[in-house]
Image (cartoon, rainbow, N blue to C red; front, side):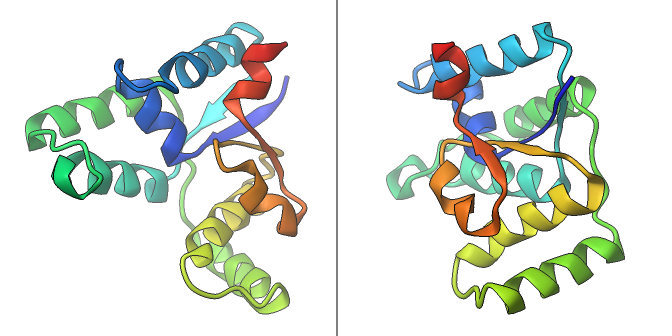
Length: 148
């Protein structure tokens, strides 16, 4: 049994039936659950989900009404355990950004790696696996899972 943290980009695509990546996102989640793997969320991922889902479509968002977004987040919380953001996560994040000299938007990805390390979750399910290689994190694309 493996343990995965689900990245925001996978959650969003699994929630949007019309997304070209929906079959891979939803399929990978279904496959992992059927295998008995554990899938987790973290507050950062849900905050990012809210931001994209509520942002207007004209600026690369979904433009969903607040009640719909809240309902989707409630469903996700019912389905997947939430890993807490503890002071240890911050300490690990600070260690990682210093060690790897992280700047800009990559600091958010580094937080996910800190959460993985702190909670001993070995894998990250993400469409941006390449962004995590620098940390030695085992980031796996949903495409890889559905291809097997």
